[in-house]
Amino acid sequence: MNRILTFAAVAGLMAGTATAQTSFIANSFYDGAVPMSGEGYIQWADLVKDLSDGDLVPEVFTGTVLLAPRAALQGIQDNVVQVAHHAAIYTPSDLPVSNAVQELGFAYSDPVTAIFAVTDFSMNNEVQLQEWKDKDVVYLGAYATPAYVLMCSSPVRNLEEMKGKRIRTAGSAVSIWVEEAGGIPVNVPSSEMYTGLERGSLDCATNAASDLVDRSLLEVAEHTTLLSTGMYWSGPQWGYNPDFWAGLTPDQRAVLMEASARSMARMVIAYNSKVDAGLEASKAAGGNIYEPEADLVAHVSEFRDRATASAVDKAGTDFGVAEPQALIDDFVGTMQKWSDLLDGVDTSDEDALTALAMQEIFSKIDPATYGVE
Image (cartoon, rainbow, N blue to C red; front, side, top):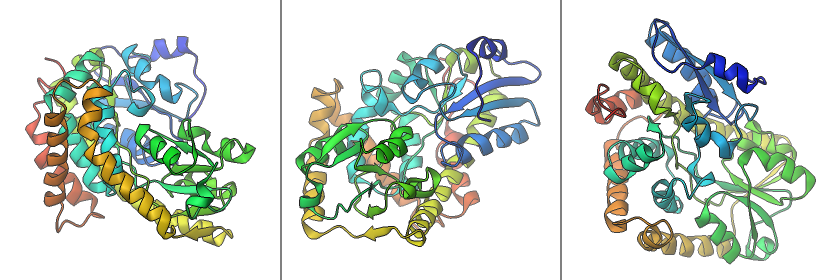
């Protein structure tokens, strides 16, 4: 559902505690075609209703008519919405721990491993859990994008063509890389990529290639370079208002946990399929798909190694983490754990991924106490 709603009307709809039929507001600032909204909220809402036998009834809003991307965290805290997607890169000072581990985004490229590993880490690491508690958010699952690539209005295949290009970035690591490669980072929400490219305030956008179709970028970005510039996972896919969460019964919370497990599987499967479809659609529309040239590959590879090595220092100095080595080691270890768990698993099998998430994450979380202690 994507319609304008006054805040007075929102207040009238809000559910502070569980009732015989608990209706609540759920928000994702992405358009419904993007998996974080499509599979992650629209289909998720139907799943929640089915799993709860109609007891839990999310009212979903997508796009930016209710909350702007940077306002999602505040919306959760103020109970304007009871659950929302929030990209922590938009509020780094509010969520430094989440942003500290996002600095490792350049080092990884598999969204299936990432979505479950980040959830596991974010629901078990004590430092990260304390951050959610301090910021009045109950975390209930991750998102993970595919590797971001360059989608541009003119060719960017080498370092020479990077010079002076205004490139939409998200997060500090990729912004630093763009600067070092000769470009100009422009930190705007992904919802502004199309208009920026259309009006010429952007020359390129770094995002998943699925957005060539999902956000119609093939209309304004005819040149795509398959250079991985990292991936994103910071912040909750489902961040709940703690008072609302505390008012639910343990059974209702368990339903929402199961809905998270299956919806994460659906999101990564959809994303991988949409990346392939986006590239094919761009080619069919006359767009150009390039492999990056050697100097660009070498530059990003060297930066990736350096950014990974410096993640611990940045966690301490830039984000103020008290024990940065322990934090980064736990995150890296959790990513390796999930890489091992997924070895041999059909990552296009929704049921297999859901079962693994339930077994390794949610079955070990007590719905009677999680987020309410």
